[in-house]
Length: 166
Image (cartoon, rainbow, N blue to C red):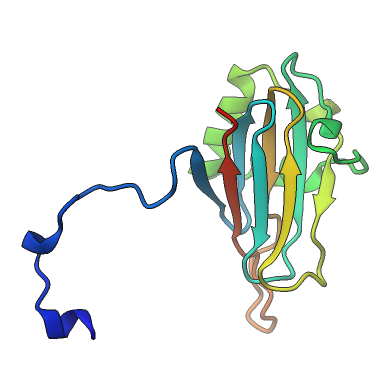
């Protein structure tokens, strides 16, 4: 039975504004070509989903003292965070907001190493689950170049679901 068959109106809504996620669960979308800065507490669980596939995720983790430490999420620091630096250098609202948050928290991307999740071969809906070992601030990016007209390869969104331990 469709909604049209029942003639549902706003008078039929019993609990407006009711949560759609369980308590303690948060949803974040890292826009394709953008980044998000998120603070985590010990034992917070993070599920990262490559929604459309073939989208890398570059991650930097800073410990509570502001020092880079990807091991807090069980990741290995491997690379220079060139994609995150590139996104932060862009002249748009998202980059300014992220740079402002990092500056307020005295987090220096210049000295950090990043970890890369997913690859150009990852499948749509592929998930990676991580658990925070301590208080930390994480930078998650969905890097990519603007789509060229003759190639169908735009950067796509990543979905972060965080289940808070408290």
